Length: 217
Ligand code: GRF
Image (tube, rainbow, N blue to C red; front, side):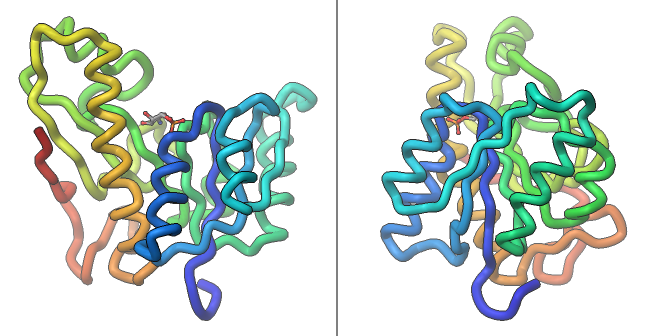
């Protein structure tokens, strides 16, 4: 890790409400992470505007021009490495990362997934939770490994499901939880409390066999 504050790059593909949560925390002086760069793979991602408005450098690396996943990832990493990031924060980045990329930043990539992993990896989590009649739903911050949505879990925000609500309403409630837990977990990493070692997440020197769980309404 670089000496001094933790330098983070955020990767997005869309709206960037999680990015906004980081920006808002930083504006309140309540974030141990320096947001040095935001990269999107889509030029029309609204999150790029959010970042520019906050004075954060932005870049777009479009995936369309590359013939294979690793070539794109190498171009992405070339932009990232200009900023010497200590931490890569995936915030709605809709690309599967190659083994090369995951290895290049081993133990330094966090993702947030809108489900209580290991339940519901993949897409359409809110609809699937409602259809299954689950009583609990939420979101998980985890380290990224080669296994999609399968890396060591760090922090979960959990909330009760209201069986009457729509998938869109449930998604909105889950996102509000994400905006609390993601900057929190990134702050743990920045402060040196959270680390990835031997394929596991460690918090304050203890191996996290289960994630920390925070309950919300
Ligand atoms: C979040 O719900 C996150 O869980 C998922 O992608 C979504 C991104 O939303 N990985 P936003 O772009 O941060 O609003």
